[in-house]
Length: 243
Figure (tube, rainbow, N blue to C red):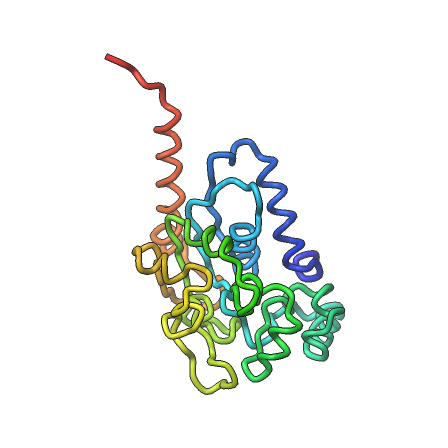
């Protein structure tokens, strides 16, 4: 339950310290994120001071622009209690500090409370006008590739287009804006437009429900970005022979 109860920024800090302590990652590494793990991965990219570079980020079903519904925890008594707490006092300090998914729940009809009380996603997405951090944008836009995989029948992320940074406009549940029509993209708050303009963003849609990716789609859309950098690193480690 740690992934549900530890604040997301604390989870990102924990990963940051771990990757900095791994000598095999000092020259760079790739991130493959699953669901909530994607916003934690982005937190590592944007917030981790002194960390090794991240080459590619492959995101499977990530709530990048938020989600408007509580993710499924399970059917146990603890999960029922967690769900009730999140729904009851979503942006309270207690819920934000003890229930991780509250850090990326974004209710379009309650944006002022979201910006004031949500502890993680507004910072991650540089949404607060007077607190935008150019370092977060610089770090995120340094990726070689950003692979955004959306599941066509996703019933966990509301809306599923959040996996591509698409979301509801403020105050409205009736339409879904594609990523390139959001202010985050148009004003380039985190460097998503910069990456996209450079041809570094891959928007991929696959069949299935949340995280239900097939082995063949995994081989086609995920593995190549891991193999590419493995080959480059292997070549870099080869001795240079002078004639």
